[in-house]
Length: 447
Image (tube, rainbow, N blue to C red; front, side, top):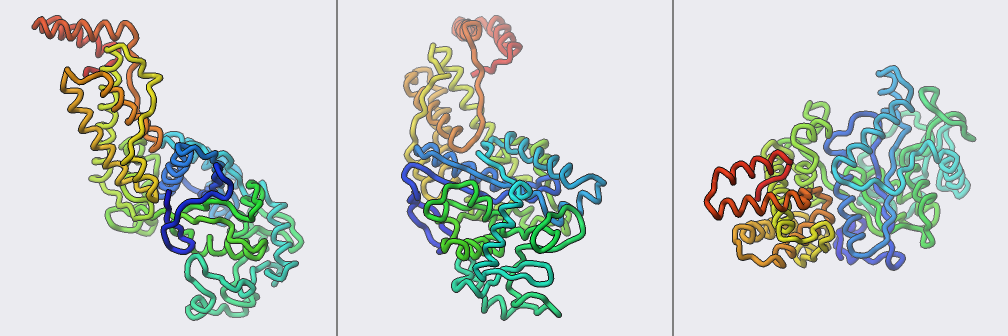
């Protein structure tokens, strides 16, 4: 398996730190408002990465956080007249429901910074003690100059940042590029610390949660993921703190997914084109949205249009219809579809193992659907061939997280289908139509 490592900017062979195991941490959302469709792209993309590793036999530990302390949360809660916790609990619940709807697996652990505050404070104290951080005016800042290779992920070196920096008047910071680890505040939720009541900086939170939740004998985890917008400054500043803390870059592989644009324009509040995930799912369905996300390479921008989501809906219905028809045909022939084995598709799996190339993987899927429909039209197609194709679609469903269903006929359904086909063969079309209606009334579908 190869993947594009943002740390180094090149394709690399995946080699786990510990054979047979994969540790993944994905930066989750700041939970202050209803999730928009861009928030859900990493929830889909990294779910498929997880499924791929599971398919290949790895034991996967998958962690994704919810940031539940932030100025945006405080301001939004004040607008609504509720507490910060009421707001964050509500939005976290909405995220979890959306993850379920979209067919993604829930993370093994979903930490929040408020639950790790003591450890965050201790982590900052260690950085101060080692000379990598300093207290200024009641706040704590990370001393970027103490890290020789700052910018190793994003390419934003200290010199390049300083050349474009606006020097703050009367700034307490030693350098404009230093970033906050702790800020004193009298507004909103705040915590006691050696530097007074305040809140941690965003960049320290993930470092501490990763250190706390993963057994890091080597000082880093396998994969750290998130949206492309997190590459700088968030992930760069995580690496800087990790370098200062234990000399390692926090993760061996850094993966970043691209943005979702709306009709070729950046999605933003100022343009008034933000699409909420719940609204898109209500209008088009969760699985069509998931399929649309997977139709683009995860690192590339994804352009949302009415046409792209409509095309995804049509393709999902093709997949669902084919799977259903195969299942019915197999059951009519007495096959146990519920325990049908998954069948490997070399082209499909090769595409996924090539930096999760889902567009190429879907090409293999659509090729199989075309062949399947040809098989279904031929009454002489061997049942073994139908079962082979059915097993491939089970592979696609399991690996891509595309939920497809089929009716369980039972003896009653099988007898009805047999009677329907017999009536057609005998050209008793009135009887065939009556049986067809009975089948439809039972909630089954015709092949």
